[in-house]
Length: 435
Image (cartoon, rainbow, N blue to C red; front, side, top):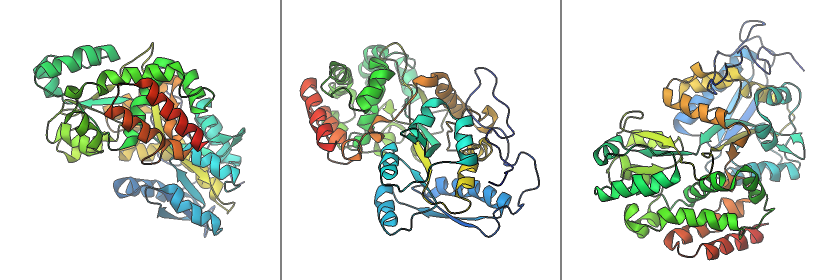
């Protein structure tokens, strides 16, 4: 394999102890000027769901690879349903060279179909050097490395309006009990609805559950439940549902009560906080920032966030994201993956904004705002206790399909959280049906 000017570790030194996960230098760590032509004339296709600014920034990252190698990279948007896009391409024998998968379940499915090419050479070395064991395992099937988590989403933060908190005389809580028993109750007593809920978008409810369960039941049980090694009727699941009921069972804590909570989608729920100012808080990932900005808020000033409060001993850190995989053995495919896995490429994207890296070699100064640096720090500090979004790891019929599985069961529970045992049984029945 051709030796490349980006290496597995890149030209970036390790961060000092306690430094944030971030990025540090521009593409190219020596060995020649950009555009050396290692892949002159090679044409590659990359498929991902990104559009708008996300697409523009990713294409800019790809442009650096083109300049360095002489290759031409074409970007293909998949639409929101990546699986529906890739399925016919695979059947026709015309898949993209590299695809970005939003679910590890898809990675396992395609690997079982022999539709993926394992990582090799510099790409495999980059995964080994730049990612912790958890992220390497996430992108592997039966010990064979296939995927690289390229773009992460931090799903363990709660957004709030500082003016509402100030008016009620409350501070961002550190524990679940503080959030429910002090922050939410004080806001409610002051005439401020505590939460906007995004219940019409079932995936947001799975995120609520995952954070509570990870903190309360712990990483080991989280993994066992994800693998269905314990049933969804397990007492740990019932306990997590009971905990969720402390918010979901209080109609006055949610905009529009129970009916409003179930009928409001994402990102309308964000608008209810930052546009209409009907609520003080909304739970969802770092990508709330874009919707808050569209609603007229300024992130870091009148739109702030605090870590999802600890339910058990430790606060949860749940991460979602997109995994880059090879779907062809064409020349340049592994080289492109090696580049995407490098701190150089991810530094470029971090500097463009709207990006979070799980690459442990990326340095703090690559991010252009303190908020993202802080998010990256929590991922680093969580170490091996960080976990990937559960609903994206289980079969999609159970974890990621509208009107069924986890989405439907948790929406039912939001409507009526009075029987956690029945909700747990509904989840178990759906999990068995999807297996």
